[in-house]
Length: 202
Image (cartoon, rainbow, N blue to C red; front, side):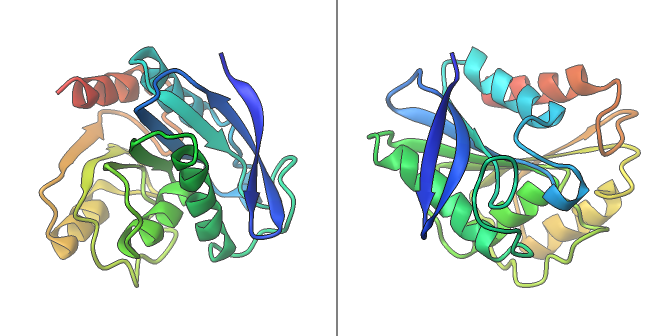
């Protein structure tokens, strides 16, 4: 069962929800753009967290700075990178040795910067990286990215643009396109969940 937690981060505090199950594997899940209503209670975020939870992972979702009860203010994706590092570090201090970093939309873009900068995580999952909305300039290497998902009809994370990024990064990643899915996975959350379940069961 999830419990509220406070994650310290460079003088601010981040609001999070932690479900402590496994002592050796966990996922940190990041949310979509807070200036457009995104937060840790987003339906896609919850779907991903639920899948990991069903498989016995410890799960941590949190609100970026300035969102919900997290202190600080929105920082155009710069300070938010520190938020991700703080969340991963929070689990590391609890002795969890294997951490998956997953993110949806804006969250996946922030995670990409942190992964490219060299954070140590065991796997990296991107759900609808917003290639048509945010530049991925500066993201150079995502070598430990195991899965990228997007919707067939996603205009913010178009499959074609994501394929171009995969080629640019020279990734040998699994790329799944959810048939009929838009950026919000309206009516297709079950398909998203199945793709994730298939990947994690590999």
